[in-house]
Length: 130
Image (tube, rainbow, N blue to C red; front, side, top):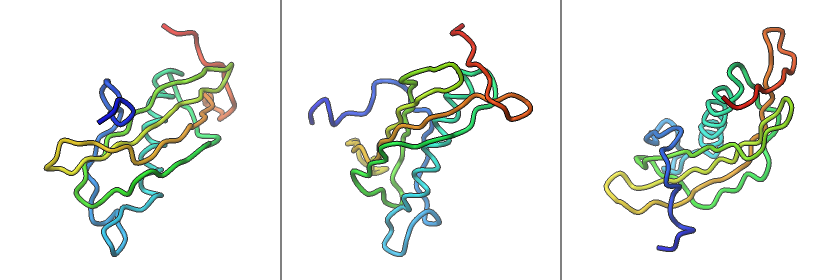
């Protein structure tokens, strides 16, 4: 396996098992379920970095590389790529592995953009790093 085929060497933001309710009749997981998981992971990172509420405003470059099957363990990795005044670009990758195997495969990747918002749901500045 090459380095490009290895998951990141950090803890995943989210890790779950793909369940039958998340799949079509052939046992392949719905792309929307996976995209929702990725959005949730990016949202956790955005909220932590902005120290408050943040909302998704865009998803760019959503690529599906391989199917996810019922029973697969799905790990989602999210990392901030860029911080603007009110926005954050977060790169997200999803990796899956058979629950009885050790070999992981990248199944999706995308870039999510979030905006930090205040209690009135208006954009606010992302605070400086702590």
